[in-house]
Length: 123
Image (cartoon, rainbow, N blue to C red; front, side, top):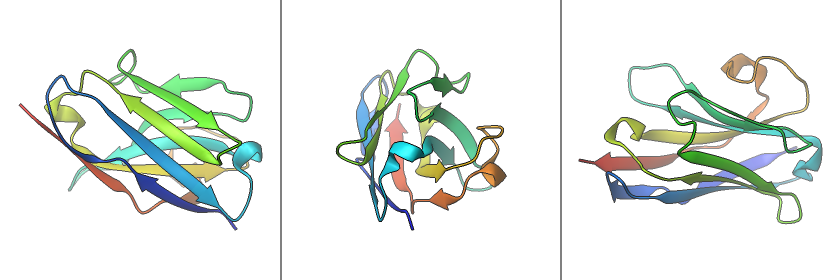
């Protein structure tokens, strides 16, 4: 069974950058599609970015052009490079994995979740 652990969150000023990592254990992630989601208190979990087994990527409208998703299957790790951060990016960020297809931004379509890492962007 896949176990996901996020890291790399923290506090940064607007305009700054962070790189999140999601390390998997239990299986090799090369057969999984992976994604990043984020959530603020009182709101639904929002799809941030997606990468499939072949490296095809998708982004949410609010992060396109600022965030970059990548995967290193040899390291069993997923990344999210976040540049030009804004206070609106403040949230807990989660990584997710799945074998099946479906709407990438729908949380119900994802099988495995990490515990999340906090990102706080101050103005």
